[in-house]
Image 1 (spheres, rainbow, N blue to C red):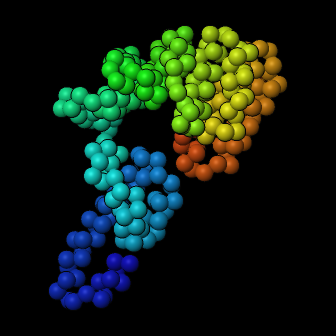
Image 2 (image 1 turned 120 degrees about the vertical axis):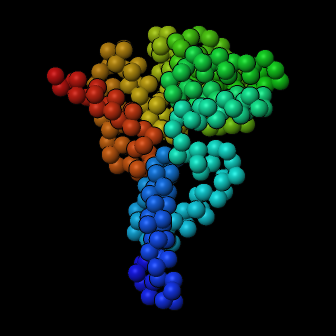
Length: 259
């Protein structure tokens, strides 16, 4: 494409294009990294390299420009997690808001710093946001991560999900996880079965398979692990990125049954 473009330019501009070309390819690589790091569909990468200039412009207009003004927009997707945590800390020091506090907690949790994520987020429950559904759910998630399942269940019981169906599904899935860890398998099974097929992701099936495994219904657990693996192999690249951990778990469980 660049060679064809050079034939249309005045003779004096051809050398300039020789310098612009490598810069365009560097930009394409940067955009491809952004696609991967931010979970955009992988077909963007194909478009970026199949039609370099047009693909890059399309990606910038459709995916980047809508949130380019946000501090968590384009460049945030290219930063290492340590840098993103540092940015969230700086934002919280500059402006002590619930949003900034929960954003920092989210980054810490993703980095495996569960205790600090909990300690940062739990402060949000002391003010006007103490009954905020999303805040309660986030803190309950961190408590579950710390093994404090009874405390997490107590918080989940306070979450008002009438106005948010997606949050309601997440709350029920986390409730099932907590009940399962507390070995309340009958109640956990009911929680998981109520959202399988409606929840976007394999987490409820994984939890339900764990209940079957712990209650000596191995045939049903194997059937679910097999379904998870088959769904993963037929799914889109975006689904495979988000559900890879469950695919690996299901595969490990099935492999263990063959030994």
